[in-house]
Amino acid sequence: GKQMEKPNREYKDSVFVDLLTSNEVNMIEVYNALDHASLSKDTPIRYINIENSLYTSIRNDVACLIENKIIVLLEHQSTINENMPFRCLLYVARLYEKIIKPEYRYFKQLVKIPTPKFYVLYNGKELYPENKTLRLSDAFIENDESFELEVEVININQGQNEELLKSCKILNEYSQFVFYAKTYSEEKGIEGFKEAIDYCI
Image 1: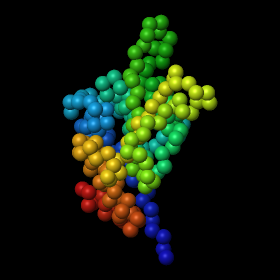
Image 2 (image 1 turned 180 degrees about the vertical axis):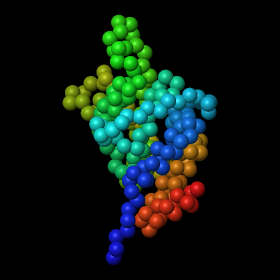
Image 3 (image 1 turned 90 degrees about the vertical axis):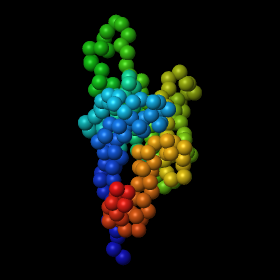
Image 4 (image 1 turned 120 degrees about the horizontal axis):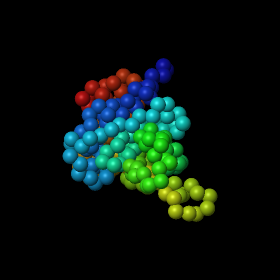
């Protein structure tokens, strides 16, 4: 039979990015839930965009400055890459280059920089723990934890992390959308994906 047209990845990916960048309140709500914070809805946010992130091949990213922290939020729809901490290391270096003035590197006095926080929202088909911390030190040839970068992986598939999803309307609705998008797409391809969007709206 005729193969169904698959949803275009860019089209599908933009739902996640648009959700968090089109309305700053959404981003604050998600950050508060993930970091157990209580920032007010009018907390200033500065989104950081790296042109051409082929350097790290990280896609579906939302990076922003909130309250002296760099928040990097990534969406994953397939198998979690165990090299994510290393990729995030390269990525955050690019972000620092973007926001810290070059001359600051040569100051004698200590230059304070925002604290990086990395979150991956997993919504792939494969079974994955509700929560998992990936550590850069696991990749070191010699066992040494003196330098560390952690990436928190949060499974947002239906039936996972129910307390978190209950506490965050945006994540809960997005989790439901992903569920319907998968279900409808498997039945009807791109038309099913469009139906899922209409249904969730």
